[in-house]
Image 1 (cartoon, rainbow, N blue to C red):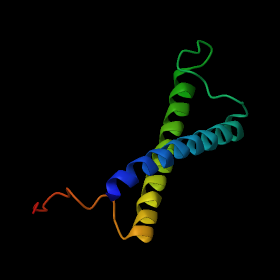
Image 2: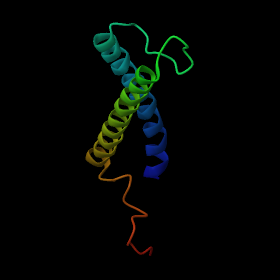
Image 3: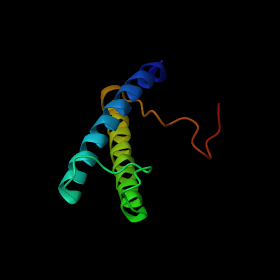
Amino acid sequence: MMKLVYKPVSLLVSVLGGLLAGTIFKRLWKITAGEDEAPKATDAERGWREILLAAALQGAIFAVVKAAVDRGAAEGTRKLTGFWPGDEGKPGEEEA
C-alpha cells in the first residue's frame, strides 16, 4: 500500500526537483557566462568548448539535485511512515 502512495509523491517531487535544477542552472550560467540563456548545441556561433561546458554543468546540476530530492523524499517517507521506499528487492535479500 505504501508503494502506491509513494509513487505519485515521488513523481511530483521529481518534477519539482527538475524545475529547481533548471532554475539553479540558469542562475549559475547567468553569473558565470554573463548571458541569460545557455547555448544550444545547434548554435552555429558557439564553439564546441562552450557547448560542452554548458551541457556538463547542466547535467551535473540536474544529477545532484535529483539525488538530493530523491534521498530527501525517501527519508521524509521513512520519518512519516516508517517505510523506506527502497527496502525490497535489494541484492542479496531472499523473498519470503
